[in-house]
Amino acid sequence: MKRELKASIMLFATAIIWGLAFVAQAAGMEYLGPLSFTASRCFVAVVFLYLTYKFFMMKSASYREDKFDMKRTLVGGSICGLVFTLAINLQQVSLIYTTAAKASFLTALYIVFIPVLGLLFGRRPSLKIIICIFLAMVGTYLLSIKGGLNINRGDLIVILSALVFAIHILLLTKYSTNTNAVLVSLVQFAVCGVISLVGALVLEDISMEAILKSQVTILYVGILSSGVGFTIQLMALKDLEPVVASMICSLESVFGALFGWLILSQEMTEREIFGAIVIFVATIFAQVPIETYIEKRIERKLDRG
Image 1 (tube, helix red, strand yellow):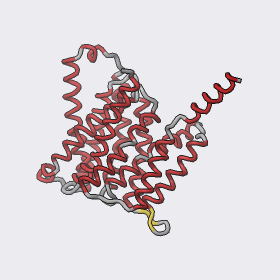
Image 2 (image 1 turned 60 degrees about the vertical axis):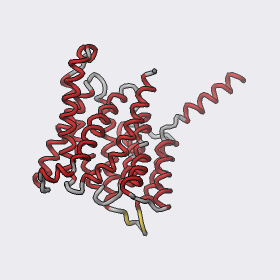
Image 3 (image 1 turned 180 degrees about the horizontal axis):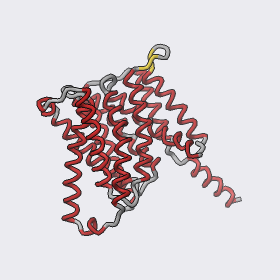
Image 4 (image 1 turned 45 degrees about the horizontal axis):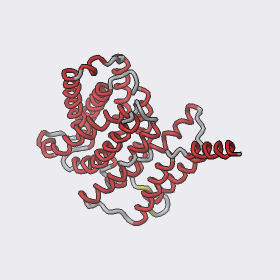
């Protein structure tokens, strides 16, 4: 199996995991505040990733012999952890004010934000990307803005989190090479866990009883969404372009809406559904290599001529 295909299949599975994670994150805050929930999931992820690392070190000779830069791994994990802390906590707070379905679709806007951020590095977006950005804005308007220009607080927060997630993905791409994926994720979640715990101790009431009541959602998000999902994403970025990887990951929006409807009975109006479809089409179209297809068609016509 080609490395690109294997990476794509892994990310598709991750999209399903992340889609269900929106439901778990919303349900987990029945007893816990957003910072407390984030801290709990991160520490579960750290334990899981540490055990995973030790397991591979004991069982896999090729894993032990794999060469990587430890300093780059620690620095990359720390930097990604700082950005991830802001992104995931913004997303978690947004779920207090909006539904899992809407949050999942609005989070997918990070795919559009990635090429926009490229402007900072002198990368001018193509006409296709400009069209996609316009479509995404229209979809966001239909999905989130009601009556005039009033936007739900939660929707605004999750849009901001999508922007930070775009930065996070670009950083993950940078630190996906010459590093150990499991250790990068471990450091990332350790940083996020510590910062979120400090914030929770200052701003929220934490009790072991509340944590135990939320243990199922914490374990799911901590082990599968955090420990497995983000590590797979980092591994896949070694074999896929960030825009292609983000396209596959954007399917989490579809699964988030589906699971939100099936499990939490969160329904969407026709206007919101149409807006979600527009956002999804924009995010998918943004990744279709239409320019390459047109160039090949032109080359074939020239060759025939």
